[in-house]
Length: 225
Image 1 (cartoon, one colour):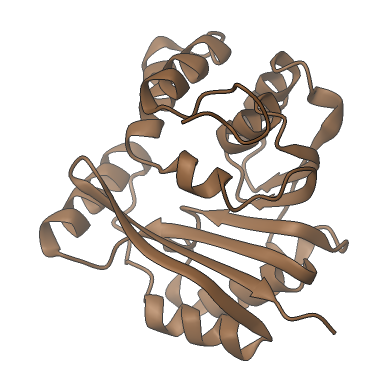
Image 2 (image 1 turned 180 degrees about the horizontal axis):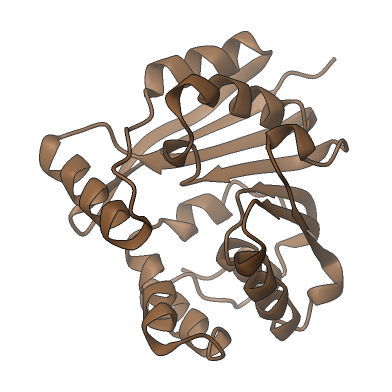
C-alpha cells in the first residue's frame, strides 16, 4: 500500500525491510524482532487515520517504530513520543534522526501518564500499551491521554484482542517471553464506554487478524466545542 502522502510503501514486506535497515545499530535479535512487527501490528490501518500534516502524541512510543514510519512517509509535521524507559527512547531518537526528519519529533521520558505534555494534539496514539498497565490504573491512563486530544482531534487506540482463546494465548505467550509479563487483555467495552462518555464519537472499530495474533483497533474523534 502506498502512503497517501507519497510513494512510501506500507506493504508489510517493504515496512519490514525499512525497519530492518533503519535499526541496524541494534543487536541482531532485537533488530529482527523490530523488523517483524509489521507482520503483527497493522501499521497500514493506523496510518490511514492520521491526517496529513498532523501534530501527533504517541503515548508509550517504545523504540519509536511508529513515529519513524510516519516521519519517513511524510505523514506528520510534528510529533512527541513518550515512554517510561529511557533505553527505548535513546533508540527512538536515533531511528527518528536516521529518517532525515529528526527535527520534527522529540522524545520525553515520563514517570507516569500525568507527566504527558500538557499540549493538545491533532492525534493521540496508544498502541499496544494499555495491556501493560495494571487494571486498576487503566482508566486513569486513558483519561490522561484523552485530555491531550484537541477538539475535533483523533484518539487512535490499538491493543490485543480479547478472543478467541488461541489468539489471546499467542499474545500472552509473546509478552511473557519478551517482557516477562503475563498480561491481562483490555476490556474493549469498558474502554469504548469511557471514551464515548468523555465527549468523543466512535469513528471506526475493527478486529484485524495478523498471523496467529489479533488486533483491536478503535478510532475516536473528539467532539468540537
